[in-house]
Image 1 (tube, rainbow, N blue to C red):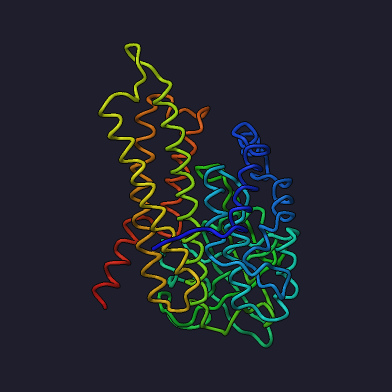
Image 2 (image 1 turned 45 degrees about the horizontal axis):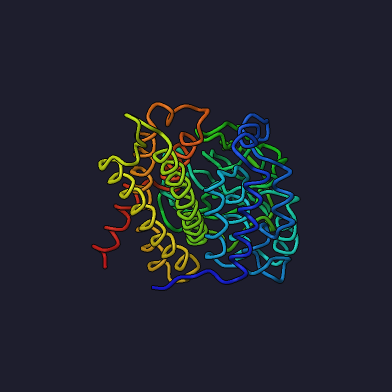
Length: 380
């Protein structure tokens, strides 16, 4: 399959590359990691000015009407620059979910604010006992008159500490692991009974656990139909996985570039170590893994917007499984070829490797998605 970006997409890619080289170098990133916020508010404002925050949102609500391939382009650059801003959680996941399934009032109120960067949202869909299973929802939603009462816990809510509002999956009927009976609610950060406990992840990004103690929301907070939100959440998460696959490709390309440069400059016995045959073979394996990962990321992006859930899930699971394995190979080889410097915090290679590891674990690791893909083949 021939795959090329359009002229507009290439122009956006070039703009992002110039922004990263000029305003988001490794030293700037380290300073951002040490900040309380964990990302750059200044960079977030620039993303809004560049149109990144409005890129996948519907045109009717201040967006640019972009698709998953446009997101792939952006996320690949995020990976190369190791950008820390909550683009995946707020724009790709929550913005996409609102655009797909939010009420007209929600779209009119929230999507323009997301596009201009004035609010950020996070998706709270996982619980500790469920691991990667989106249907495992013990958090309860009980109807009382015109209101819903939410109680329970949600874990590892990406970029939760900086979110202004949360999309919370809660069970309105059925048993804990039933596919039916899951509802999705919009919960503002200042809602009475909501406790947000934030913490840094291994890459320095932020996540949070939510405790909902009889949080009361109205019918206008409901996203989609009551009890039918699981399919909406799965579609949003699949779109997020496709974005993560693109980010991983960007990280791998950056790692390969850094490693190749090191092999050309580091000398032993008076010659560059890149001339050693064994190291050439390792570098070739890394380049092949990255190129094949790019092909899988393209497949994921092309299928991410599909309304055929089975087709979409199969493509997304295959891409996530392969890229998780390839990312481990590229990351480990890069560290090995850099020697001791490959694991020190002062060298960017260690940060690339940690990010690849976190991408693999987010929304299901390689083993989980390999099992998911094989189960679909058997059922077919």
